[in-house]
Each structure stands twice: as C-alpha cells, then as structure tokens.
Length: 308
Image (cartoon, rainbow, N blue to C red; front, top):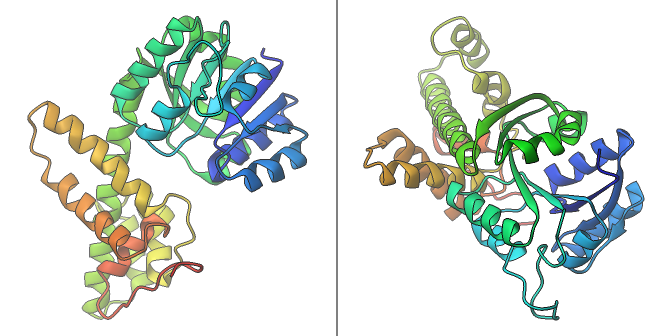
C-alpha cells in the first residue's frame, strides 16, 4: 500500500477521487492543476500540498494519479526529462525511479504506450486505469475501471484501485484498456444521440414524453443512457457529468482506431458531427445529454452560464 498519493488534474473527476482516497485513510500528499486556485482549494480541504511544478508532485508521492484532458496534455506532463528541471521544462518523470503513475484520462492508446516507454526509461511504472463512470461514482469509490499495463505494476497499486472502484477489470498491455474505453464511449455516444432523436421526434409528433420514456424502458429501445439522460433531455437539464466536448473528443479517438483498421463507422461519424456542432455553438460544456438541444423542434439552445 502506497503511503503517499499525488494528483495531477483535479477537475470534477480528479478532485472527487482524491477526496475518496483521503476518506479511505490514504495520505494525499500533493496536488497539481493548471487551475492553481482549484488545486489550492482542494489541497486545503484534504490536507495536501499544492504544487507549482510536476516534479514536486513526483518528489512528494509514491504513486501519482493523473486525470488530464487529452493527448497533448498527457504528452506534456510525461515529457522526457532533461538533466535537471528548469523553469521552462517540467515533467513528472524527474527522479521518478520506483514511482508508479496511474493514468485515468481518456486518451489515444498510442499515447499510453509512449508514456509507458518513457516511464520505463525513468525506472518508473505506469498503469492505465480507464474510467467508465462519472462524478458521483468517483466520490463514492464505485468507478468501473478498465486497466492496462504490466500485470505486476497493476497488482502493485491494486489496493488503491479497489478503493476507487466497485468493479476492476484487467484488459491487457499498455494501450489495450484505452482501446476498450474508446469503444465504450463510442457506443454510449451513439446511444445518446439516438435517444435524443427518438425523444425529439416523439415530441414533434405530440406524444407525452413521460409515457414514451416508459415505453422505451420496456422495449428494445431501452438503454443505460435512457436511465441517465432521458429525463434530462426532456426537461433540458444539462448539468455536466460528461461534457459534449469530451464526447466529441472520445468519438474521434474511436474513429481514428477504425480508420487504422480500414473500417467504415457511419454512426460514430454522425454522432461526432453532432457533438462537434455543440462545441461550435459554444455548448461544449453542456452534458452530453445536451445533444437533445439539436434534435427537439423549436429549441434554441443557450450557452452555459458564464459563456460569452
């Protein structure tokens, strides 16, 4: 069991994972985020130290959990270290011998492989722990985790992973868990866009949507998305648990994998186009359920509060 855990990326998911581990009697030693105010606030709440540099997080931690936005951010925090840190060059891999990095962001499989290679050069280990759950599950420790990397490294941090999850599945070597996560999100996004069209058409036909959702739930139209997003689509409640911007990004990861295998994925392409449209309209921070704003007749979607 690691004595000290650091966090890089303390947005909605990362912050609640840190709180969960603190409640589980782990020492959360250090937190880092480009949003320094968020890092300082969380650090004060859970008794951690806010860090201004990535190498400080590594120094103060045995295990570092990362939850960043995309491949570019991941490449940056795991950049190849130079002889010593400089104000312009920072990396989690400085003096990282013996450390383990648990990487939870939804990014391309190739980037996970590259990060593992760089970590090995630094005599450190990596685990990809792809999450198929949302904010409440992060806080409650009931995430569904798909893990990739070397089995011995996954086993080394398994006690931490079990405190964060209610279900933990080892998928295979580096990159494999990210592939499965991309498929999960591809299908979820397609289901979400399909449900929005079904409810939108039902509303245009004049059907009661409470009735329609109940019928869907008892027939082949049923899905997990119906349970989580159906009422929100009907009532235009798009509080963000999984943003439209992330849905667009993740659909793009799946499409890139399909292109590599020379597969035509028309539903994934159409779904990505819908979420890209939301981003273009300034609705990227809506929950993915906000795709219904594009399908219900007569709706004029408004930008989230604070957006210009």
